Image (cartoon, rainbow, N blue to C red; front, side, top):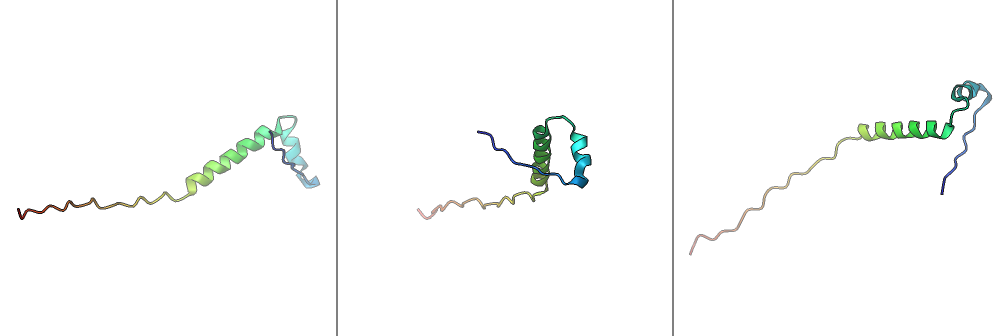
Length: 63
């Protein structure tokens, strides 16, 4: 099932509508969203990996 989201343009934004022309607007918008998602993902700080000390063996040498 497809999700449809409406986009409105004000009169002063006619240049945007002219630029897109008769190209498929949905693919254009999807690519911009994907680009923003990649940029946001790359700007996130890397996850800190906690180092866990190795467990020491309890060895009883008093035999």
